[in-house]
Amino acid sequence: MYVDSGLDAQYISATAFGMRDVRPGDIEFFTSPTAGVGTSSDGQSIVNVDEEELKKVQDTYKNDTVQDYVQNAPESHL
Image (cartoon, rainbow, N blue to C red; front, side, top):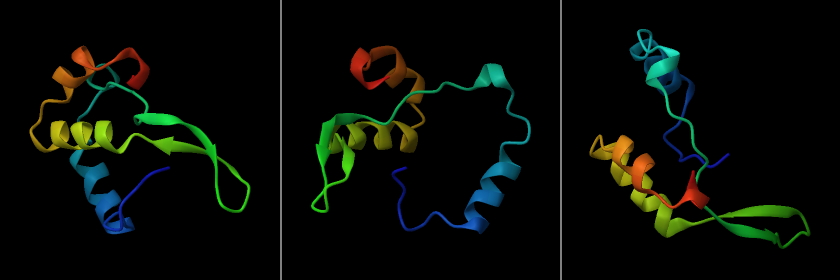
């Protein structure tokens, strides 16, 4: 899971409450953009984040254009 330091229980609770009227048909699922797999410095298998593409996804959330991203993103990022 890839999260930032601002994600805490209070934020999650407030977000969940704010989404109480969201229905299954209102939701799109896709995978965070990846840049392949690798190995961490201590030998664990990891999935690398595509930071450039992730920035685009973050911008779509800020601009409320996620649907446009989902329709136009490369297949490898969905």
